[in-house]
Length: 310
Image (cartoon, rainbow, N blue to C red; front, top):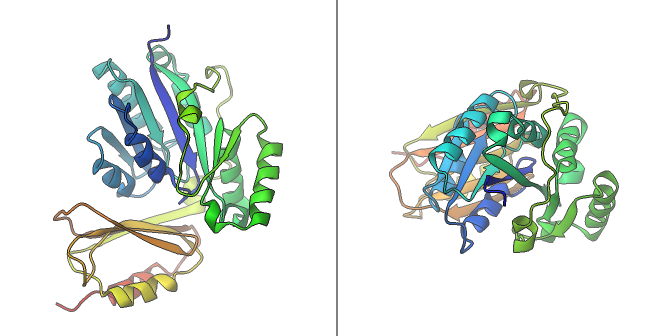
């Protein structure tokens, strides 16, 4: 019997629904004894904050990509968890949306980790309504994420057309025929798809993947914070006018007509507001854009014009 701690890698492009999936998994009855490592490309780890509302076993790796600049931090965190908590049943690794999971698979092949951990599988989420719009290096990164998958979740199918879904099914059947395909709306995942080990034992002799381009050549990231509140009407108008070069926006906000704070999520022209637990934190947002985006100052100035006057 294999007594090593199971590891499940959750991958997918920016805004595919990884944190929603982790929240669902954490609510499963037998998830006691599980830990979550959350990587965020930005300086603030918004996803770890959100998940921390549901579990006290969430560990943050931020301000870099888990598959390159903070890879050593991942190795140290995995080893620490496995040695400090031998009763740990599983570790979920939520990659940032800019990560290639193949590099993480290679990390798990290190001898000092291989004796402690086993890789049960890679689950890659796909935003069904947005995936086909990715081009160039962004499309190549998304393809690397789906190529590594043992399970492919076609998420947000309610926002995709029948033609888009048909194209995705054909594409992934052709590109990754070994992966199990499952379609869902809000990252619903049948138990059998994540409880059954599916990944071959990673081999240290395999050639590690190297990025075609550094993340700094593809993405730029910055953060913003304020002790104020937003005028909700002006904020919604600002959100409706966001440029296409802004790939991801997320964070904690406060509105004029609401006592509790909200988690704001924006991707692909869609915005969502989710109630957050009451806290004293100031508003804070993380922006991820295409590297050639030069409208940061204008964007922030317009955002700050949405603040209530004090």
